[in-house]
Amino acid sequence: DKDTGLLSGRSGRHQDPASADHYSAECQALQPLRRIQRQLSLLEPSIPGPMRWLIHVMVNSRHDSQQLLRGMLIALAPFDFSVFHFDARSPADETALRYSRQRWFAEARVVHRGFVRGTGCILEALQTTVGWMLGQRRGVYSHLWKLDSDLDLSLLDLAAFRALVAHRAPFLSQPAVVPVRRGRRGSDRTSLMAELARRDNDSRLTRPTARVAGRERVASQRL
Image (spheres, rainbow, N blue to C red):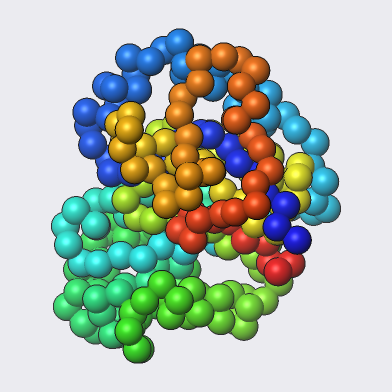
């Protein structure tokens, strides 16, 4: 079952300061988006009990990658994080220590760290996190959210997205992705590309779809 709910509440690629100005100028689109997000946040849940999400993100040791992760940790502060270092093979590697030495990283809710054992690919990273999640933390988390580290979450209304997931209870779901500028790439899946609508009743804001992308999806532990 891949009943999937989408919320056009943005994950735009690359935290480019110019993108904020670009979208701030589109007030006619932002106002109905925020209004709809407020309505979605009031949806009644169909999932029994509380949800607890684990966020999985892959990083390298570059300074820009560190700053992007720091911003994500702030934006998604209620969640626990599993961080996979795809350029380190152990916590003792210099590339991993560049994070460990940072106070903001030590104080963040990073509950698990993964390191390269083979190729360091996405599949290996997910296997590492899922193995830990279903082993040492079995039954703790209701959902795993795989996120790219270069997403700007400024348009994402977290309460609305969580309410939508709790209401529809899909096995797989994800926010649609707004490109940093009109006409640019937002998602590899055409059906998951989003744009700011200028109408309150735009049906594209939430919809079932047969596909989800591999990098921004939320997976229920029921899978």
